[in-house]
Image (tube, rainbow, N blue to C red; front, side, top):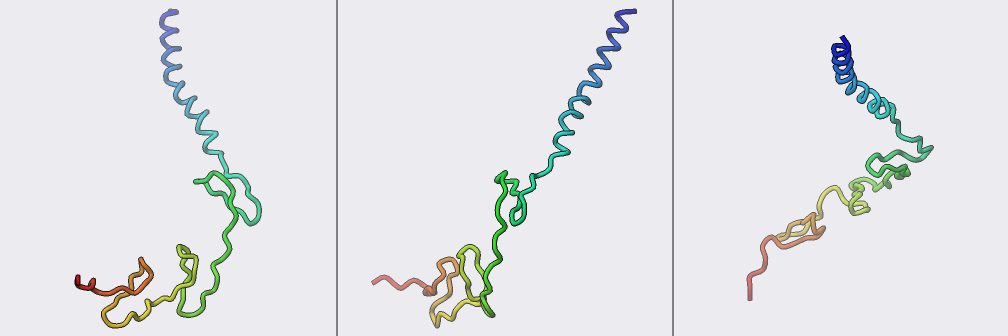
Length: 103
C-alpha cells in the first residue's frame, strides 16, 4: 500500500509542480505597473526610464512644415530649380539632371 501512496504523491507533485511555478512567476509579471513619472514626464519602456514630454513643434506658417529630422521649418513644395536641374531632397539642393560631359 505504501508503494501505491508514494506513486500517487509523486504523480500529484509532478502534475502540480509546473502549475505552482507558473502561478508564482506570472503573478509578479501580471501585476507589474510602470512607475508614476509625475506631471510633464512619461515612462519610456525601451529606455526603462522616465523622460520629459517634448515641447510641441513650432508654428512654421502657411506653406511650410516642421521637419524633426532637420530640426527646421521646410517648404511643403520643392523650390523651382530651373531648366536642366532637379530638386534632390536627400542633399536638400538643386542638382543637374545629367552630369556634365567629361572635358
